[in-house]
Figure 1 (cartoon, rainbow, N blue to C red):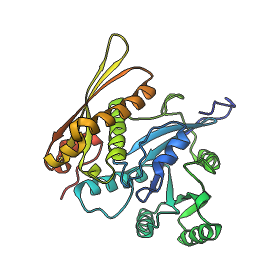
Figure 2 (cartoon, helix red, strand yellow):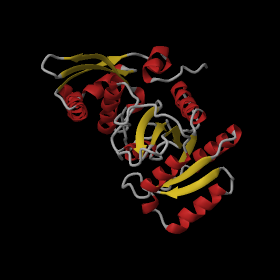
Figure 3 (cartoon, one colour):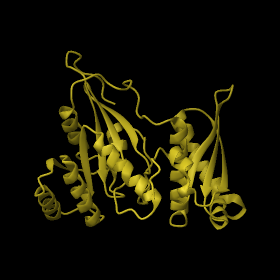
Length: 306
């Protein structure tokens, strides 16, 4: 976090939505801009399901970055809820950043987002991610093609993973935000309940451990959070899957898979919370949980109509 430099300068604050196709690197960029982990990151597309706010300081400016789900052509109810959340985050923001992954080749999704911005009458900052892994000719060609739309006020070429170009992007965004009081304490990094962030961390470990076996068929909820007298925290979480066969995959032979996932999640939670964590994971079958209104509320998503 950057400390205040000149207290005679007016304070600024604003919301910046990071939008893009699935797996464009939005969560990695938000974590980099904030300077700490506020959003989970995996190699899987559609990892982010709800809007997550990461808070960064740049001099006297507080920037509230809204990490949104990837925008794509939805097929299921959950897909529609995630896409709606992404556009909702963009609609409420002072600034919009469109992030394009130069390696993914998800051109149809990018075109869909560009059309959506046109319909909303919104301008955006264009960020080409993984610029360090792409030849310059392709970068310039992509930038030129997208800038022909007239939607973009500025173009940045960055690597969210290494941080190349990110500081320039952050300074540019800070200069554009309106004068006004900060919305959060200077040392707060995220506007996410700890219970929700803990559930997201466990879901991240499930994604990483189970690969393609069933991540989209599961969700995680923190059911209990108890501060013990010795300062440690007892956390009980439920992993919901849709079928018995999926429960067996999540548990693994002799419970080894869920034990490994629990250990990975516990270690990260202890580092984040700076105290000992007692984590208990339970796997339950709830058929068609992705059509359950209550599950959407827990995820911070609106329940879309059929």
